[in-house]
Length: 197
Image (cartoon, rainbow, N blue to C red):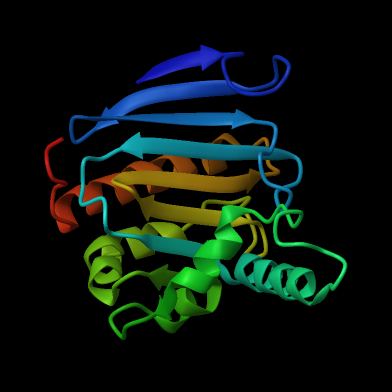
């Protein structure tokens, strides 16, 4: 794993980590937010996993899903806005493209905190296994609350993390990194490999 200070977005306040999971490269950055629903700093990560590019799974905390749905509704019902001028984040489009899915093998507390949307339920089941769900529920203190924007995404053969980072807590940062690399491992182990290019 490599650490680079000042290489992340922002004016010297960001940093980046790079590493490999399952032989695949990943990068995590802390810096200015790239989405308007994230306030303060944003922790974001991306990994090229080489999994099936058709698989699409989105996990987000329920308050973020609710806020994005309300924003979409308000924008669509505002007669003064045109589709091109809306400037909606792509997450809102995903809410309309993918169905929310669930299953009984994960605890109710998980489903109370998180929503999972997917192109196919089987892809979500293959990715969000019990160990990953446990990591998502076991944030160390001081833990980010369930209302803090958080998202994991599998799309086009890549994994992504977006998270509002309010805390200067190293334990929160370390756990977010572990959640992301655990999500990458679960995707590599659970989903078929992508077609060679």
